Amino acid sequence: MDIFGLLTMIGGIALFLFGMQVMGDGLGRIANGRMGKVLEKMTDSPYKGVLLGLLVTAVIQSSSATTVMVVGFVNSGVMKLSQAVGVIMGANIGTTVTSWLLSLTGIQDDSVFMQLLKPSSFSPVLAVIGVFFLMFSKSEKKHDAGMIMMGFAVLMFGMETMSSAVAPLADVPEFTNILTMFKNPILGVLAGLILTAAIQSSSASVGILQSLCTTGAVTYGAVFPIIMGQNIGTCVTALISAVGASKNAKRAAFVHLYFNIIGTIIFMAGFYIAHAIVGFAFFDEAATPAGIAVVHSTFNIVATLILLPFHKGLEKLAILTVRDKPGEAGEEAEQEAADSALALLDNRFLAQPSIAVDNSRDVAVRMAHLSRKALFKALENVFQFDKERAGQVEKLENKVDLFEDTLGTYLIKLSSRDLNEEDSQKLSMLLHSVSDIERISDHALNISEKAQEIYDKKVTFSEQGRRELEIFTNAVRDIVNMAVDALENDNVELARQVEPLEEVVDRLNDLVKNRHIMRLQTGECSLDSGFILNDLAVNYERVADHCSNIAVDLIRIHENDFEVHEYLDDVKNSEDPEFMELYREDRDKYRLPDEKKPQK
Image 1 (cartoon, rainbow, N blue to C red):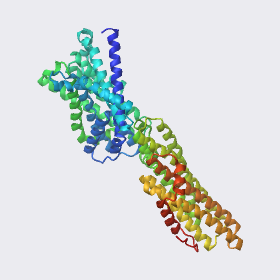
Image 2: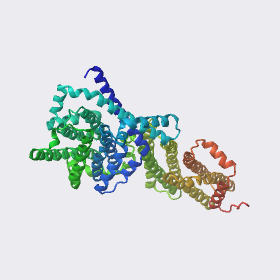
Image 3: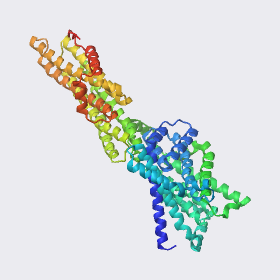
Image 4: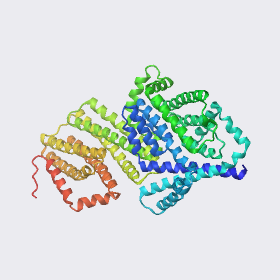
């Protein structure tokens, strides 16, 4: 091979790896995080885990991506270590789909039908369709489909280029001698391990091996140990991903490693013992792309069948490798439980943006629950002060601040990723809502401080003033429940009910203040109670404003219209029948004592 042949081979490898990356990205976007959600809802059955791991990997075409997701889910507490074992085994089987696709390049039949199955026949057509979708289609799904088609076409073109470039090596004795060395099981395993660890993809390294076998100089005796090494080498990605993760996440990565090492030892021992006794005729025959796909699939299926009944043993072996220090297991379990929501914001998921967006939304909902809890405790203290409860409000507010800082930073990182339109809209809503959720907890702390002042100064309200404040408080409780529930359940209809109630809260704010001023003039209420009531009313009204912002963001994201102020003006000024009906219902529900009912 001359220098130009070498450059052609390197170019072919580059195109091959690039095509695999593009195709994988397109498949991931089409899957839109649904594959990750399937993994999240894993049951305790390792057998179902195998099937789901196989399915997910076959769809996204990357066992490394699947195992990294598994490590992330275990790290965040979404998935147990015992659940991860089956998924990892299934991922190893799923990754063999790629080798079967690549084996199509080795079709030798001259019939028209078989020739049409060759990538060199249909990949140009896919490339044309893919380019058309990418350049002229405005549909995001067609754009992603175009990425998949283009990625596959480039992948196959790279494969053909590699095969053509290495073809002259069949007549080079030095090349043949090097390949003969790989018949040594240890050297073959090391070669496959190093190649796969370097490019971090067993599918890609198997594809390179399939291109080399077109020279006719690669025998099954050399192929067999290399494939074993490739399966071990693919564990490197998960092991790197587990650095800095929780102990269980590290254990999940080691389960992947031990599965492949033990499977390789058992499979190789059985193969070479059988070969020594029987003498396989194909051992010294030239390997074909299809033959390599058979070996790759057979190893992973047999290893899974053998080791699946011993899945608990693999789990225990990983636990022995990553040990707990005395007393540490309980402490870490408590800490992981406390941080389980924030642990969902794992950088490993940034490679799968749809999963990262969904996880961020789950964290935002958890943050909203904490903020609501802080507010409700503060509202209780207004009427019956409890010092311990006041301390809880402060702790909850600090935790909400932590959520805002962590989630905000994560969302900024996520915004730089390649997001589809749906995920981009979700991210936009979260960026807006997180600030409003945090501000509600700030007002909770303000209200709690006013409750402390009422208690310390022994401030009292008149019976009429207390009743009005209770009605005002109930309206605030209800609007917060409405906004948080709408966010949690992605309920647009419920979100539409927030704005009418926010208008009623504004009305109550004015009425309560005006009525208190009238009582001050008659001496029924004190000046101190007036100042405190005014501060409480301001915080109540601000809480309702933030609930309105959360609801409006949810509505506008679903309608793909980001003109929030224009929306509010339209709703309030157009006398929309639905809005007015809800407003009247809320106004009647939160009517103050002795307030006259307006005539229709």
